[in-house]
Amino acid sequence: MNTYTPEQLIATNQANVQALAGLSNNVFAGIEKLVELNLAASKAMMTESFDNMQSIMGAKDPSEFLALQTGSLQSLAEKSTAYGKHVVAIVTESGAELAQMVEGNVAQVQKDISALVENMAKNAPAGSEAAVALFKNTLSASQNAIESAQKTAKNAMTVAESNYSAMTEQAVKATKSATKKA
Image 1: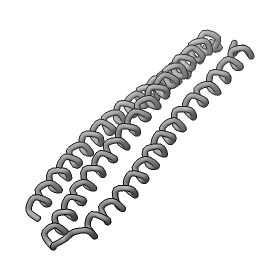
Image 2 (image 1 turned 180 degrees about the vertical axis):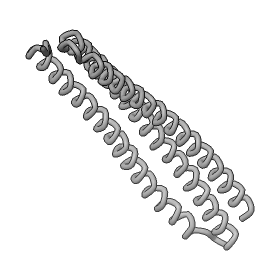
Image 3 (image 1 turned 60 degrees about the vertical axis):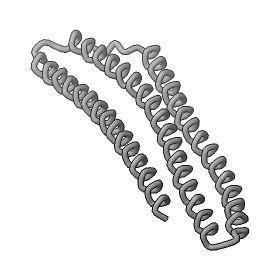
């Protein structure tokens, strides 16, 4: 009744292992980029902090002291914003690659399942047409639900990116206006 051969099963399992390896490599590449960014940011922040402390301690009067502190706060805000943008870029890039890989694998799995169902339907015993039709409808509904979930996830990511960008711009503007008033 089922003509799913051992070779097909082996090929499917090999494809799944390759897909898992690809997903794992993608995740680790994203983590590696974040670690590199964090190390570079930490090193730069430490160096800049010590430089700022030396400059502030060398201030000759209160107005110079205030100007140096205001400048360092503005610089910190700008660098924090740049850091956040880098993090978002890395996460977005990794997420897009991951989504693309998952979509490709989901599409292949859906295709394989549809072929299996069609094969089962051809070999189904007489009188089981209603059960086969119900199964096909259920499969179609689940595939539509998966596609809908993927679209929703993409839209949510787009909205999150947009909101983060707007929030970042507002933070930069607020920092600049606050440091001008000081």
